[in-house]
Amino acid sequence: MDHLALDLQNQGWHTSPTLVPRELCEELLAQLLFLRSQQALKKAQIGKGAQKQQNDDIRGDFICWLEPDSSTPAEQNFFFWLKNFLTEINRRLLLGLNEFEIHYAFYPPQTQYQKHIDVFQSSSRRKISFVLYLNKDWQPEHDGELILFDEKNSEQETQRITPEFGRLVLFLSDQIYHQVNFTKQERFSVTGWLKNEL
Ligand code: OGA
Ligand code: MN
Image (cartoon, rainbow, N blue to C red; front, side, top):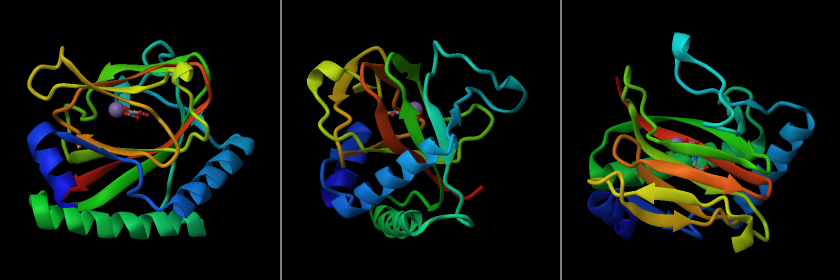
């Protein structure tokens, strides 16, 4: 955790292959696949409110939000894990995090998410973005990496992250530009934001 806090402070991002228990990842993947089989994943949109629009070129994923009230045991376990995690981060970074929003995400082959930043101009309660990847047997030739850009120079690529099973990446929502490269394989994840009070 100390290493994680230092990374966020010094470079604006951190990644770990083992922070989230593997069993929890398995449960979340099973739930994601179930939701997909029920057609519960919906085409993601960009922008907010009246600006909302659908644009496959910009963003090709399908999502389903996790609702605290209607959550399964797997999701409850993940909320529990996240609450502890949030407390640990607050202890070290004094960000006043007290809320999160989370969605499942599925990128079909030949989709991407172009370079963007995760905060809406109208509200900046999102402080830390996280993505937990759920792809078994991911191969380099599947592409679909997450690319992070430098927090001080958003033209400068700093890191390529492979969406392999169990890997967690965290970055500062209002500082780090990033993109999802075209994926050649189905690409699954749980994506969310740690937010602070109004
Ligand atoms: C997002 C996003 C990155 C990823 O959903 O805003 O940037 O690697 N996702 O899936
Ligand atoms: Mn993003």
